[in-house]
Image 1 (cartoon, rainbow, N blue to C red):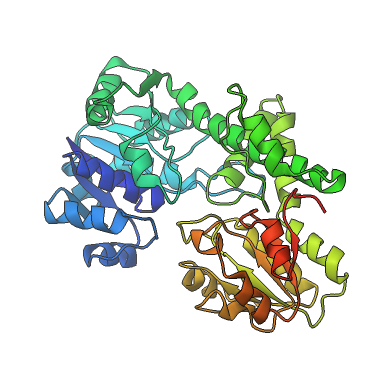
Image 2: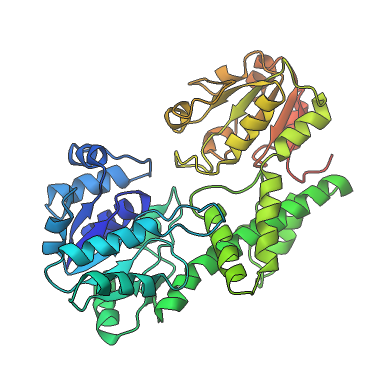
Length: 434
């Protein structure tokens, strides 16, 4: 099948490369000349394990190409995916200006009717707005469908190629048949397509992310209670997760969630509900809890070292919002750094891949170390913000020797508290008791 993917960001690149790897001919389009030039030279503008090789393989087979020429991409495609950003607006709602601008451009430049599919995360009713925009600027009978993505950063290729489910939202049989044919290669072992109306598909994406974020915020609140009660959230988590009605997934407490999806989607769903006069009280609380949790490590440091952090120097392990990505969007580490430096402290950070992206932010009071142990030299405490494998089994003897102080604040519960204490350090995790 001949496809165009408009938007060569995280979703567009992964979707385009994986669809090309299934034998389709895919043209990825972006307005950024710099990004397209990089892709055509063999580079990749984001870090995602396996993506660079997947793109290279399909470019070599002439199944995947990149261009800034939308007209050219439309002329060679029968299905057009919209995968541009939907950033958070000032009121928390999703900003659809990029999506609707693309719809207008499709209407003005397409010479034949297309199936236009939203891959971007969009609120309920967006397909109707796209239809209206297409009709306003074209006499062609374009069709509109929804096909939301469910990709975990760091495991996106596996998620696309071996999905839990493929949501197809269509309001006509022709579009449904076309998308089911496109996704047939991903259903060889068992049928994973779930077909529904467009509006239901649009809501499903937000509902799924809100549920996962709810589990995280619930566990974070429970972990904070464990600290006061002297209980260990790890034991509580195992006890809860053994109930098959609950399961073990997304029960890990920490220093808050971040990334491109959960923070934005939780706010957008809450905004949609408020607009309809049906506020989602649980979802609103999820966002409030997370906003508070993002500075939990600073509060623990203040409890241990005092409110005045002037002259204190902290080592921070992990900048990306999660492991296996360089994505800094809404990363808890950035909130931690901002609060520490606001209180007069300085920070030296290490991350396996996210240092270049963080340097570009130009954050005051923040320096970097290429080696995780070098970041510790002369520091009053260590804070762990990201669950990289690099940090799961460190040499605690080296940590103890390099630190000037003796505190380890483990924002992802990666370390064994007893082992840390046996190394002559003091330990504070999330819900591990006092």
